[in-house]
Length: 313
Length: 273
Image (cartoon, rainbow over all chains, first blue to last red):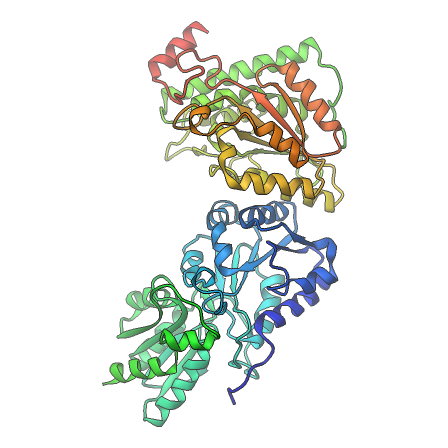
């Protein structure tokens, strides 16, 4: 049921953005010369007057968007996660400090730019974004999650928001599930009694696979899609801490400052239980596929199962 | 570019005297702030004073409509005390607030924040104002507004790479509703600009990129007005290189790298000037 790929997230995103642009006339899209790679090109084809390629100038891109927001537009800035971080200070000091309605959309996050290597692999962006006041952080798990979240992000949510996607690798995770996206809400992909795996993004595929395996071993495992990283669903996390007593976090990101940290912040405050963190701890490297990198760095179902057995023991 | 109320009108002696007296009062108030806080950037503020006075009291058209009013972006945000002193003269801020600058109980921050009445952009980190101004100017054009955007930068600020990004961007967008003013006072934080990184080539660079380049005396109202009038007629983005003096009129620090002075120096200035 969870095998195979659907349309890559960036494809789904690029096409949906055009639909949203038809209704929302204030929506403008700004990129720094990666319109093709990010699939912002579909918006360019549909609305050339509302599409800006500012050149390879990420800092200018962010403040240009801020200026457009100041006169009433709804700018969506899109680029590679890594190079949006180059404008972290512009995001912090202008967009967030003025609480402007600028949406920052990252593609190529995590290990998804596998071939380009560590210079292009953003494993620190969740940490860098969630620490900024006024900033919201959303991580869709797959194309279905993009369809649930993006209309809300564009049409309903105001203010700075970071939206994190990968490149092509898009295993089916939430397709067919019946839930609506609400800011600050996490979603139970699978219920369980002995352990809960909390994560976001494509790695939830491995979380679900691990849960199936653990079930066979007699360990009842819940899986939570924490797609709203900030604000975070404190109540849901506490509920599952109390219910299962064991937490594993998984992320395609550094465990320092990312989802592990965000969940741990809730847990130590609300209801401390043993935790294990699965994620990156250093820079990436080149590989022929994102999957190879996830396995190389142990961000996979095998690591989850290992961690689970230690927690349950 | 769309003409404002005063564009091209020759300045009367009365208006000239009025601008001078506003600037002088603001200058005294900037120096007076030293009684209350010695860490404000007095030198940079006095460098900006006549430019800000001219823009605020002759050109800037105010209003609530974001696209049919003018924008004033103080990208060199450390000159905030000069802007605050002038916003007092404009009636946006109570004079008493000036004496609480940077105080925990006060409204006025060390650098501009949009929660302060009359402030169009929160600044303080150099190099960001021009990009923001390009965005505002582009947005105004898309909505067919009449607003114009004035961005004030320092010469030291030109070291920032983002200025290059924004400068080349503005030309690409053909923004003739955007005017940048660069204060050439010859000093940056650590040392004279010539010792840190030369700035003499800047007008050539801006011209080569496609800006209309003008220059003026940044403390002389007639020079400023003539130059801004010319800038407003241009069909391209315009940059004005304004020769200014850091600490202008405040002898204790005038034309030195020094930003600050003691309350005693302030007292000396206020009793003699």
